[in-house]
Length: 445
Ligand SMILES: Cc1cc2nc3c(=O)[nH]c(=O)nc-3n(C[C@H](O)[C@H](O)[C@H](O)COP(=O)(O)OP(=O)(O)OC[C@H]3O[C@@H](n4cnc5c(N)ncnc54)[C@H](O)[C@@H]3O)c2cc1C
Image 1 (cartoon, helix red, strand yellow):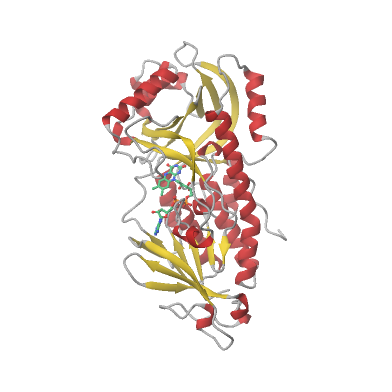
Image 2 (cartoon, rainbow, N blue to C red):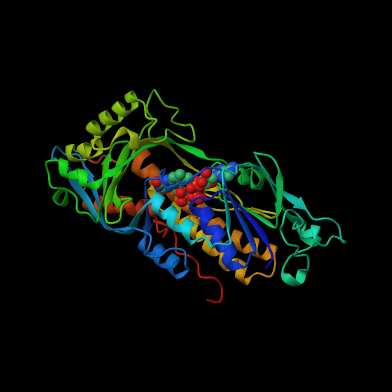
């Protein structure tokens, strides 16, 4: 399927990876349409990728060591008991790499082949399948007739004609104008306009709780009385448990080489006033009103051991944000020549630590399916088969983790080590998806 024109709506993690996948697999025109202007690097905080998922993605050529990362090895589950740092509930193995969202995005962006046309400030209003014209269609039959996209009308080069029912897909821009492509990929996140055309019945579901998030330079930990290395080894992720929530903290690479930042996520009930906590977008960094910032301080003092409340208090309000927790699953990922990727296809609650790996795996599976497919139907069916159920299973696991860890958290004052392990095992329930599932090897490998 060479000579194909592919549009990717959204230029974030999934968008960059799919643009790379399509270009490497043989598309001769790949256009990324990203609605924001400028770099996305300043907007993200931290995320983690499981070591095993990293290894698979490195073999597939989607990640490598040149993107800054920080090693995590253990997860210390703690709860408040009157001591400065709290009582250790469980010291869990935690083989993950942590990333600065912006540095990961920049690394993926730099990896997109030079042939990819990455357009900033292009917002897509809607997408649609273009019906294939009747039998005598040649160039137009495969939807390639528009705007500089080469024709590829013969089944011999892998393009299906009218029998496939769809001749391509169109993209309508908010600024005006419509363009046609052979395939349109929706990498446009959880409020995807492409999803509205693929499965309009699916939408994000509010989990009923929120997370406060923040970050600051790790060197500021020295301002606290206890030496940081003693209170908190650099390779440990911390989870402080309390009734109705938890706070997860770990270090991530800082924007300057060799520096580290503290990244934290504090899950709790929504604030009673001052925020539309179920509004999809939440409150971005820098927009948190003083009363809400004060509310966060009260929550930290009430629920966290003193050391961890002091850690959170080192965060400047300008680097604090509030996000409602949502998830989303979709009954299908493809329709005609439209395809969903990353968060547009499935949003997993963050407890599962799998969002970025899942998006990159989607791109790997897409590239592998393209390379072995003779036509669009075969490619799209393979992608649906390999990624649809995997995404739904992760969403389901994320819901179980969220219920057990936030909505129906146990009485932490009485639980001990073996009971915590049993509690964890009952959530995971034999599933291998914590941190993402193993990437399926393509047939024949
Ligand atoms: C700025 C930003 C910061 C983030 N920070 C973190 C973080 O700190 N930690 C974490 O775990 N996850 C973060 N995420 C989410 C994380 O990137 C995703 O969960 C995961 O990596 C999969 O991402 P995605 O590319 O599928 O979707 P997203 O990352 O949501 O990207 C969707 C992209 O599509 C663009 N877009 C949306 N609609 C349109 C449209 N109509 N036309 C054109 N473009 C459109 C958006 O501007 C965005 O760039 C962040 C996402 C963004 C956009």
